[in-house]
Length: 331
Image 1 (spheres, one colour):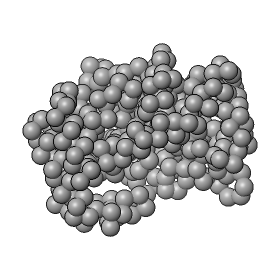
Image 2: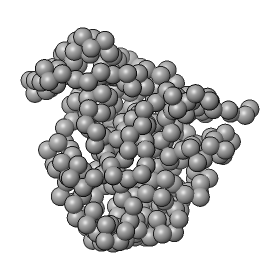
Image 3: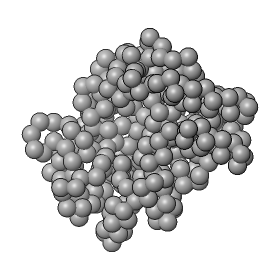
Image 4: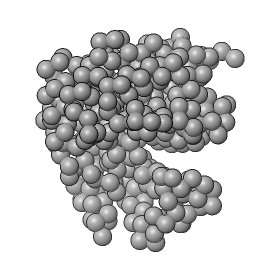
């Protein structure tokens, strides 16, 4: 089988500049956190990636430990890339991350120079790539000097293994310190990746949103749909085939309380008044601020991608709509 991408793909997506950099990202990106491990169907993975690219999604987000097992998502993406996507390499933005647990022993996580450089080397090998477009440090490491971590990121760029640098799960204060170091070293640091959605407003409160604007860095949001809670899937409670039932590592069944379901129903009413799905409204709410360059979605089937990219047609929020959303989640 030979894959030929849809010739009209770029007319199906909107793109935003990532901070003050030259890089444009699609407002919806595909994350491979779930559904790309060794327990997933290869043909389905292929269909998801093809559907994304055929609809203008050029950005594919991975991390070294996405699976299960650790490394599996990168390995499976690498197979699909090598078999089908290699002719399109210059049209793809591929990112990976390192910072969480990856291998045994004292050198298998956090932010040391040894871990980060070993990790990028392993990731490139798994994905059959010469470089990634964005390499993220996946989380703050309070035990490693920040200068060591930032210098390692600089050297990864100088070695030609990454074009741009990103930081993930940082707060505003540490972002400012990291930016100062990276700027002095002329490192192309352009983006923060953080969790952000209607329910989780952490970056509004920890300085990350404010400082990203001040420093001219883009924000890419993950879990914009809060593991599926901000979709129609949980309007009537917890389905038996849902992630909360089948895989409780990230979304636990007990988290979906009756109060939470009532919130979801009220939010859905606002979405209906906007002639949108709840998922599209949730994505649009993240994207209302220009500093948010892209929302990373996950997908277990290609139809979810087709549903989510409808956000490109979303209309601006009124102040009363935003006030009502805020009121619901604070109840």
